[in-house]
Image (cartoon, rainbow, N blue to C red; front, top):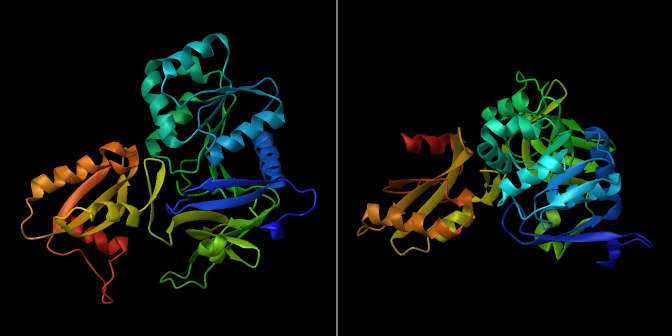
Length: 357
């Protein structure tokens, strides 16, 4: 991959499973991280005197970027192994004032549950708060609005390849009249456009393409990802629409699902379930959920001899050792999994919802 490296240029290589579950190595120039760090520090008004609770792993691009922001600003970080020992973190915060937070929505739910009535003792000292790119429920938005009145809060949109491309305010003055799927304002020196040439029924929508100083260079062994770039633009795979100069996220062009703050490909779950000898076919999709924002629906086509109750228990047992986002499963048995005229699994979610009635 020497073709991507300029003389004197420093690059980072991040190895990740990616949103689709397929491994990839992403080549990111140091200048891209530095550009994003400066943009975030300015937006969050991050200072040398700030102490940030940094609880995300550094094999996560969000955690790495937050560490860079702390280093560039000259501030300090409390690095912890997740939120497993939050009571100790809270006790520490009373004498060593934590002034910055960076969490994914599922992490915020944990803090919300653990703090309960003590939330003001913690939140009143928070100067800034960055939220990861997963969706956020209206209930959580109200909780942030009511309990972090002095904090600058931004919710970012962006993948490993494009880091933070858009930032949406989520603080006390957040406008609840604007749809929750607005992805925010684009950062400096970054451009976007919607590719409406893709085959879509709704021509007002298109795939979101991004270009800018925050963009990655390329992939290692990038044959599987070679179609992700188009004339210097990064193809996000996100289906968006634009209204009144605002970009709204409408869904995905592939079968990626975002459940409980975690991204997973539908085919990955289907493959695991279809390994059971009683299962003839499986099809997964997601629907809205008040607690988890989304939950997974599994439509199961069984062999004739299957006892459905035992099979349901077997499927749920499979996922006991998997992360929490696998466990938000609702299982429904059908005589036949819905397929298209071409014999492929039906992926149109509007059509699939009919099978839940």
